[in-house]
Image (cartoon, rainbow, N blue to C red; front, side, top):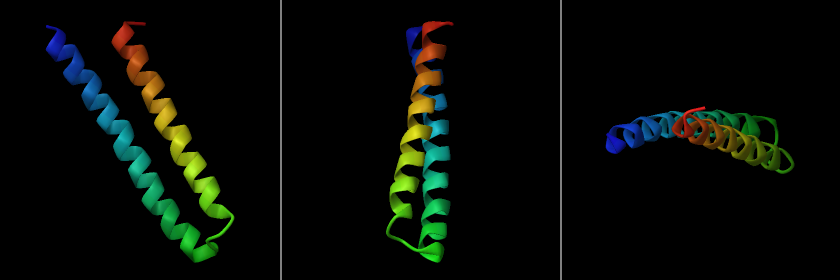
Length: 65
């Protein structure tokens, strides 16, 4: 039973990692188009925020709240 709940959490975590990866790649294309230097930090920050939100929701689901 515990394996199934871990598997579901793993799938949700994978979903958020996929979204963060997609946002990063699209953002990287935009950053190279607009201008690299100051915007790469915004892109990295946005990716970190998306990863954090995904981690929060996946942990929250595993706790049963």
